[in-house]
Length: 629
Image (cartoon, rainbow, N blue to C red; front, side, top):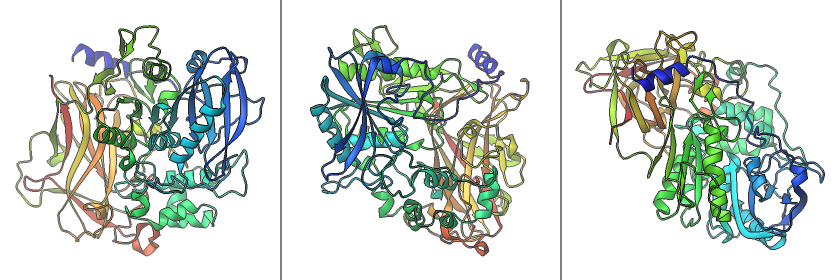
């Protein structure tokens, strides 16, 4: 074992610090007296159609200087409301407040105290006179620079998740005062991997919870427009199994959640979803952009990478930086980022990002201010962020690259073999019957987590997969213990040859890092989930035009598990698990070719699935193996 392998493996023996409960609105930061240093003002800013958006402005009490403006627009509420009720944290963290900014928070159209009608991810339509989030951002900036005292005329915007999507909208046809944007975990296409779908399957648990809480129609603007749904049980697996198909949730929503009804009416990648694809509209961005992603983001993992690729394609000369760390959704904004669950990272990764990247980015582009102290990304009084700042899990190291993925990452197929083996050598078996099979029963779907919960959560992203690996409907393949470190950097792709006795089916592939057995419990043989995703087979050729499977006919499936930067350490194993349900995170496939959202009980049937592994019909995962330069 190399010295690095010994160091990282030793770090993994201990228990991680407990994570704070998830929120992107109230980061866990050191206390600081915001009220002593800032004045709060509540205003309503008129949009071009006369609708007024409720806005809170925090300005430094020191009025002898001028300050840039930093905006967050959100659908989640900008409280506390009231002239004397102050936030405890301003901006991404209070280091910004100490540095001096004018902070602006705005309830988006139709939410909380803002006027207008809320439309879930209202699409941008170029040339349309109808207001949207892009025009609302433009109108807000224009009002602020003209009406807020002591501003420098420079504006930045930042936000996480939905708020990150708002940032991406503000980048389209941007106001000339907008000089820096940081979209963080921004969903970019709600059918292609973000929030509600992946591989054509509906992310039912998240969709139900978000819609029942955040998308209900309202009577009038108010300070509290969200309410938690009462499931009547802590057992989400049971609740959603008894619910049946996804459209049955409409009985709980009546007519007050129009977006969920929209989703159920658009079960393919049709015009409804295509209009909400953000990257198609990202041309013409000419101010610096800092995109933030997390390796273990359960909600919006694909969006940041999709945005980064679009920015490099449509705006190649623009200063765009992608940062990816070992976090959950929004995890860089809270805590120190030293660990997730039982996985430790050897340093305070979130603090590294906030101190060395985020604050210097806005200070440099909004204030012309270089870091006061040397950082890994500054020199000669200038900020020099590389195009990609990425954390290598396993190896526990930050890296900077001129592009992502690194040029020296080369794809290598890791093949499923007989006897549950996994090898970079292609299978030699030429038998057309070389395959493994299992029965997929929609009445007993494979759970996505061992936790009893009604909400999707986040820590399942690094959960020990031993809770399902011995199920008869989960195929397991693994390498022998590695004789040297194996580092991957880039997208992990999947190529399966499968058949089914049904006319449709789902295939889930997981790539897992298996720890050595000679570690203290529970880390001995710990199966760390590294990457996983799903493909609904009827969408194998097109997300817009589904096709049935032909029973018992071998069929090729190809899909991606997304990007990773990870080192499988010497002595560890690479494992692949294959299954056909991931419940209730994703809705169940009836395994008959029907409209899955509206499937009837009789449509759900047991089916026998085969995964082939012969020389002529191989199945494999493609790893982007990083070679020394």
